[in-house]
Length: 111
Length: 398
Image (tube, helix red, strand yellow):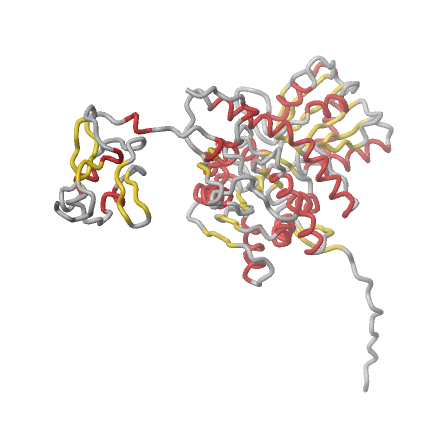
């Protein structure tokens, strides 16, 4: 928990300035399941990115990258909208690779 | 047969314009040329935005006017525009201000320097379109600066200065320039105007510290506060108000250099050797000054203290100027039912322990006229020491 600032030290008006603020990792609110992806089934349609109510689906320009668990609340919308069932919700306790990429290296390779 | 036509000699240019308070305020707005004005018409403010809209339609201002469906929306649009980084104004009166109130609190807590031109009008009910100060008093605790003006000239001058006052880096608050409905808004008076260029140079560019549309410096504005931060943010608003008098001195000082008109948080009239005084807001100050002039001719030691800055309230200045007087009548054009008038409560607090005998007079509600004879009678009543903390009503049938 960061030290609480005095009124004189805060930007006025409740303004939150990006580089002067501790980033709240709201993924800590997630309970239950977390999303993972099998890239070999993914067709890079980015529907998950469009539908994520937070910023937990990472994309490099137009290329799907995976999940940012620091912000994912576990709502499962991404898994629901995925047209190829490439996204699978797994137990929170399960250890998964970085970005939740549990399988496949190439999009839509079906390997 | 030829008629002889006498051609008048070329008239000397008169430096005055015949303007109502509303037109004077609108002219100041045209000269300041704000980025956005979001507004909804309401009597007696309507001629402000009507005149300003004409200026925009004629190409004399490049302002984006947002015509909205209510004053709640007008103030909300103003908050959006000001947050984005636009120099923003609005105007309203009475029920319009009442409807805005929720968003006025938000604007001041978000520290948005929105200029609000107010044409003071009684609040419903009963519904009434005429002047009193109950609408501004409803906004008393909103965190907006409140300046009451006496006439069209002051309305113009303060509307020119308002953006600078609001945008001062230590202030950053909404500023309400309150002019009495009809008495000022609809009454034509001689007004001296500055050139557009002079106003533009005086006002300068608008620099908001954190414009929302600046993607190089990303911010979140108006977020939720838990109990661990809300208190600190409210304390900052008090800090802003406490910084206002210094900003007012600086900006009115600069303004005096270009106009020779000096303004302060208060205006003291013939108080130097006075024994009795009336404290008053707005246009009534002008009437009371005339009576003071009359009474002075008969040797009465009387004066007037006009309060321009109601928020922040200039405690120290008032205490300094009124201490030593025998008795003071505070005129309130609004009521706080179950207590004394709002101005009386403030003056009474500022003078606590000073020994000045105070009495409260409620007058002019819903546009009820105040006559010179009433004012003379009150200066007479001030001779009686039994009036301490009395609350009386002027011109009320009882």
